Image 1 (tube, helix red, strand yellow):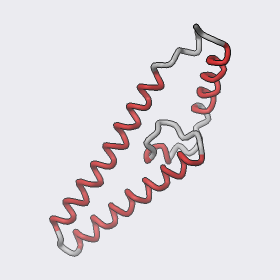
Image 2 (cartoon, helix red, strand yellow):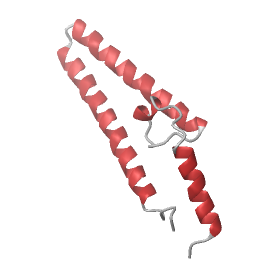
Image 3 (cartoon, rainbow, N blue to C red):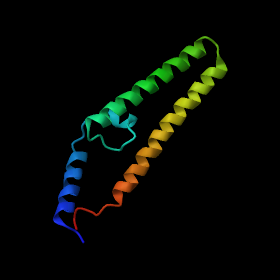
Image 4 (cartoon, rainbow, N blue to C red):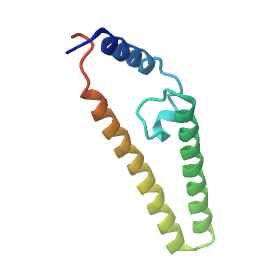
Length: 102
């Protein structure tokens, strides 16, 4: 049964998602929408980690350590794809909720 409190909670979630805060950081977040300061901190951490991996990959290429640079590049691609998959699964779980029009 649909209660008023569930509708209010869904409306609050919708309003939080529609604020578009920290839109640049949502690329590095495992969640599709940044709602709390912890989500922002995790997104900043992932962005710093990815930047460090890119710099270290370029450094190893400069030093002609091709196998190490290949491993770091694969790790970087894996991390980006894992972030995208986790974001999509969380978005699918969120879609299972009741629509606001009910």
